Image (cartoon, rainbow, N blue to C red; front, side, top):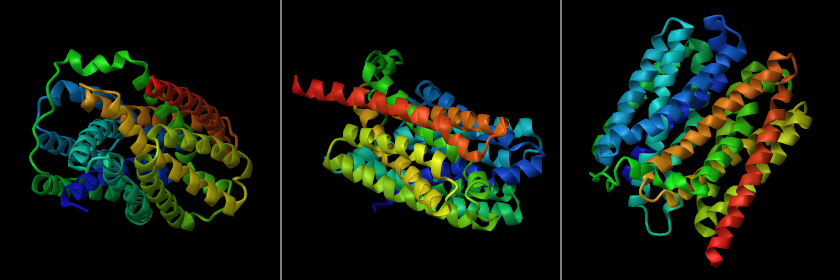
Length: 385
């Protein structure tokens, strides 16, 4: 792997760790802050809201900046948000800093994706984007289990302090390893938004939101589900999160390679169908421990199998506003994250078992599948004209 791709992946490792470790340490935060599990789950939503606000804000503040400088600025904001989240002493302050730490997320994926595409060989753009996203999957494979262990044994604040330090290391790697790249051609402020007049970007953003939201309805509460429904001991959570991370790594690799070989839209549509079927099975079969592990593996693999193809599709459908278009993939992802975490918490609040968190996920997965079928047919029709 080129050191430039490694630097990009280190950034997505940071973002993946700060976002996904929250799922494994919700009980620790709940206990430390003396709040309920659903309230702790709202910290997931505050981060996601930060992502959604940060993406369009990037167009205003960074559209004329050199790509490398933009990456450094985003990682600096990431460090500040996570450091102050780690040392905050109230739920209100924690919520604010979770929002701040989410601001650079979508922008980093967008700028990083553009850089990866520029560095890639022709016809290998989806695989290059998958290499960048690989940092996030490794975060789930290694970082999240380690972060969960540290949280359980030394406190969740130590976990986030380490994340802030890793952000500083990432800034240094970007400084030394990413080549200088000029800013994208400036189409003007209004020009950045012109592509949004077409249907295709909105279909893709909606599909991303519904598809990822479907998984997050259940996965936001995976630690409690595995303990209360699947009857695993709390000590097994670290190993369970490792398995989830392996699914993400494999799914990301497959999604990138299959999209380069076949159709990015076809891969996204097929994976969305798998997500829908998996959510149904989670609702009915979570009580069976082995099946619960298999279904979790499939769901996390699917979560990242759609990432590279959907990111690439949005780049292709946002000519003149690629920076905004790429970031909107993460907006869609985190709208799904926020809505999924909220809707998944509703059955818990109503005193239903944790497998019921998959019920709203089934509905969201179906809607995402229908949208991608429609997009696939539109793309196929356009290619024949």
